[in-house]
Amino acid sequence: MTITEAIRTYRLPNPTTPEDLESRWSKVLNFGDKVLLAGYYYNGAGKPSYFGAVYEHLDDDLSCEGTIAIREVSDVAFEDDGHAIAWAMQQ
Image 1 (spheres, helix red, strand yellow):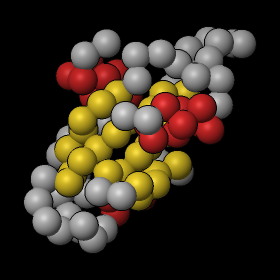
Image 2 (tube, helix red, strand yellow; image 1 turned 90 degrees about the vertical axis):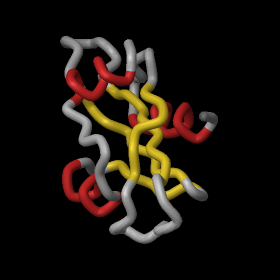
Image 3 (tube, helix red, strand yellow; image 1 turned 180 degrees about the vertical axis):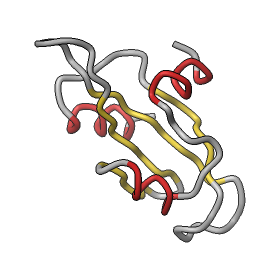
């Protein structure tokens, strides 16, 4: 899945701010100069339904109001949000 497809499928805002992500998604972490997201997208009963996304800052403003954009979105679905965040941390 390309980033454009992921934005459309998961309804990810791009560009956005960390503050906006935190108000829309429950699993958002600041990790160095990146912002990590674990999201849920229902894929059917019994199927993995979590994905990971990595946002990066577009300027020097690392506050909650700085502008960020998507850099990576996982190609695979994970069984829980912990695995999605672990994937995002490795990107």
